[in-house]
Image 1 (cartoon, rainbow, N blue to C red):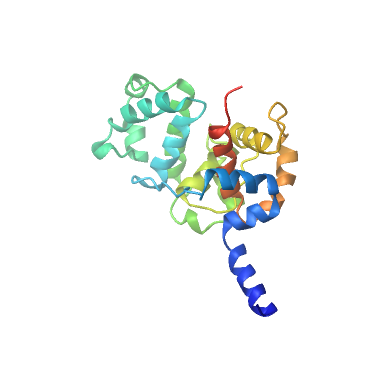
Image 2: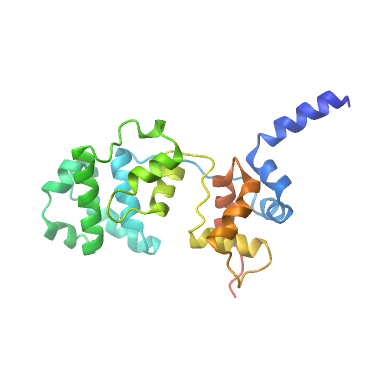
Length: 218
């Protein structure tokens, strides 16, 4: 094969996130072979960016089934099951608590609604902003930290190069893959390790989550 053609084929292959990650990290390559192709895709909430952020707040620090039940009850409080900033602020606190929201989540969602309406947090056109700009903008809302903003980037906006170093599942998965399941990397250590996966760190994070799924219980 001609060298020029070989280089062209290699360049095409490196545009594949899994090929890029596998080439950068043999330990991840073994996981990719076990798990198969990445099936991560943006969830793009039907209710738009506001509803997606509300969902993220409701899911914080809760088990999946519990969060899903609360989310379903909360959505049912709105016409068409689509919460809006105006609808949230018009809703009595008692109704939100009745759906299962803690006081902290209630205050976070109301603060998000208020800041969207007064223009402090503009969601129109937010997809045109950089990752760092979006994290900074969303972090102005009570109860939205870097993790929630990163999940929004990955699953609502489909950003390919998000590396949530504070996420327990990503830290645990990376540790499992690299043969140290009992010693989690620090966020700083994980940040440095993630440089090898650019510009596909979202896909690397997805594989770290899968490592936790496929790892046998201790």
